[in-house]
Length: 505
Image (cartoon, rainbow, N blue to C red; front, side, top):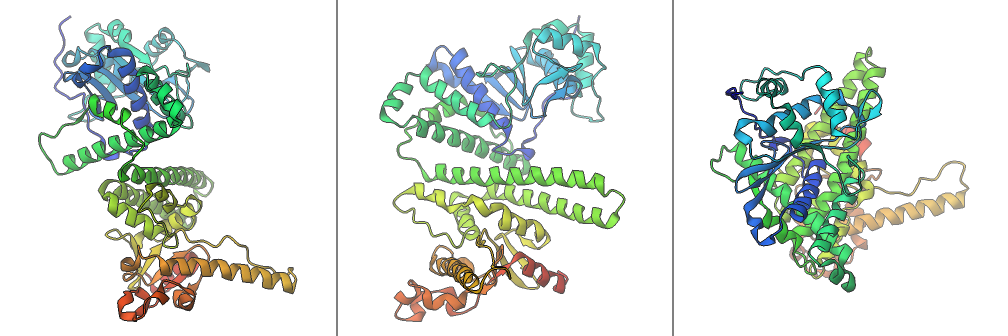
């Protein structure tokens, strides 16, 4: 039957919604390494192949510019086939669409099992029968983008159902499962990298040198970083309407990362490792916050005042999401490291001779509270140019500073109270002195009036006599120290909130 001409596009460009550490990127790494191992017999011809994100599909593999594989990724929980229906018809339709006859395989990746009538689907024939027997897929009002229903009709009108299903597969991972959970994706990605080393006969050499795990970790982080930068650049070019930029990654670039010598790593690797730590923490915080908010909406749906508070919280979390994205997409390596120094002004890290020390620059324990909590609570006051918070013409810096020692209670004896207070004071003193002696942030502190903490309210000037760095300068004018000209106070979140409430800003 003659193909019906369809004017609408089947491609899309959704790089604006990309998160470099998302599930999709890791799935793509697995699929590409599998393709390199299983499909490219002559490794010298790899420059014929490329990887493309967020255009025809979530990601695709091309040979000499022609699509040979398309991959759609869904990170739902255990779900019924009906919720995958539109995604599957999109894959089926694209795989046999007249413009893309070169496609050999169309894969669906899922984070959990697909069910039909309460039973797990593990065979394509079973899925086909259930899909065909179900309702037609969704339509859309888009004037440019083909809907699942339109591709469904294209298949029906051109009698292409059998051909489409010959190309369609649910991706099988090396674990033997037809799904890969969000919790397991990192482990499976690293195992796939190890498989590549085995494929290239490099695994035994790395094991003998005792660096196999270090190499796998390095490849993992560098691949994620490389993909992230590529998609961010596409996002930038798309926003600026740049013409002629390449949407594809040549697989030789991926092979170069896999084959890199990781015994002397560049600073960009460590920067991306720090980004990984932050985004993992933020993703957890974001998901937990949104789940909590949705539950509370249901519990208090008739209480307008409480609902308003939860809406404000939701706005705050989403605004911080935008801020985090900006950090990852717009800051250079040097700017990002400064961002980390400001987040942890009490952490002094010397990485001049050993870049591995950069790992200490992001302390995970207090990223959620007080740092993220401060940004969420005062999101309307954030100054994005330098990631500070402006309240009533004063400038505040959100940090991870938090004293972990509990305050004594009235039930503690006098000696116990004095002992606990002495320990608390020693901890605060150590934090204050570290800030005073951290020359990485001197210039930044000229812009700051208050440093937001979890539970500390003190003036840094009170600790100047205890510093060593400040005393090294014989002449104060040579010290260039911020505290020579202004005072900076440590202030907890609650006290900071009171200042804002009083000012009304």
